[in-house]
Length: 337
Image (cartoon, rainbow, N blue to C red; front, top):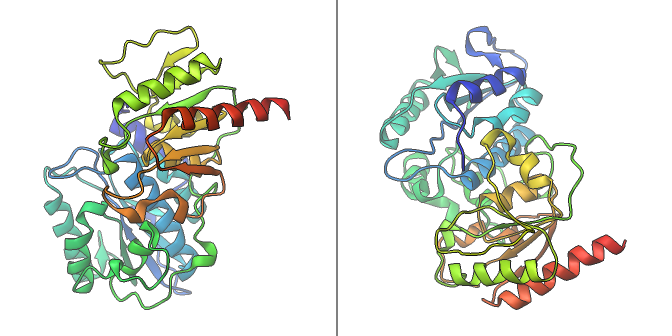
């Protein structure tokens, strides 16, 4: 995935209408919500990926809708290229953006967060409610710091999702998860006005669930079957082992600031549980997902439990013919309507 410069990502947020931290003023009419979300896509030991960031944005929306703050403070890392995903949140909530420095190790960022929790201030600005977004692999230690234990794994709600996990894994959280407003779809990020093409976007890599079930060979065969059926395919990867050559095949990537346009311009997205799939959900793009039944990290990330309106179905078997057949049937059926 191509990256944009930090200053370009910052400019996107500034254009979205977010207030500078220096101009932020507390309104006595309601609580001030601070969302600590200084993601970094290059950080030791585990980085924040696209799926981590976009699901964090949705969690932040849930906090705003439930607590109805009079003011919102959002801290971000100035050197993070996924910042444009926060543009709608910043604009519609008139959030004050505080820019945190890039850290070599995430422990530095978490130490900064913990100091702000202790003082209840961000850059001298007081807040009432503290909420933190953390990468899922850090959930155990962060929830222990915030709550005394990893309370997000307690199944107060069924099914357990990444959003219930983030909701309950916060300090002093006593309210029930707002399930009525928890569906994940358009409204999380800015959705572009695009005309969907007849192309199928195939994004084969899904780091969180491994590649032992849905292997590179499976994705190669699946892509080949789609091409043989006459469907134009955009391949969101350039795996060196693939020797696929076809006039209907295009290998293309996106910048973070144009990821929504890139995904939404397709008739269908076929992928594992990965960030591109979450962007498809956020833009209302039809999504056919492959997920193994078990044996992969973080079952709370499963698409089918997240309330995604554009999810067409889940394939759990490593059967490229089945996946290709469902994709072809849907795209061709769409053409006939």
